[in-house]
Amino acid sequence: MLYILYSNLSEEIQRQTCAHELGHIKCMHRDNIAYTSTNTLFVTDKQENDANIFLCYLFLSEYTKTELMELTKKQIANMIGVEERVVNLL
Image (cartoon, rainbow, N blue to C red; front, side, top):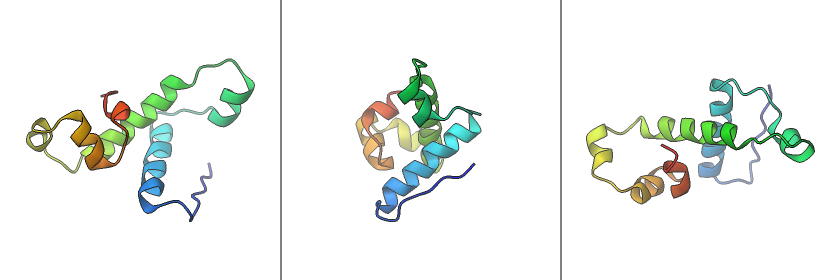
């Protein structure tokens, strides 16, 4: 499997993209999401959500439960650089 990160993307976007794609690998998603969503009626939302959940857990692993319990979901989203809807998946 080959992933290409474009150097014109910010470091934060590259980090998020790597974590998201790693989520697909760890969740054993084997579909070509770009092809599947464009050329079939197969719904890929679950796989995308799985990858985003993995991204959140990966980024949140550097914080303690106590630190996170004091924050709102919006604050957590800002802290790890994702949209609040991604944190709402947890």
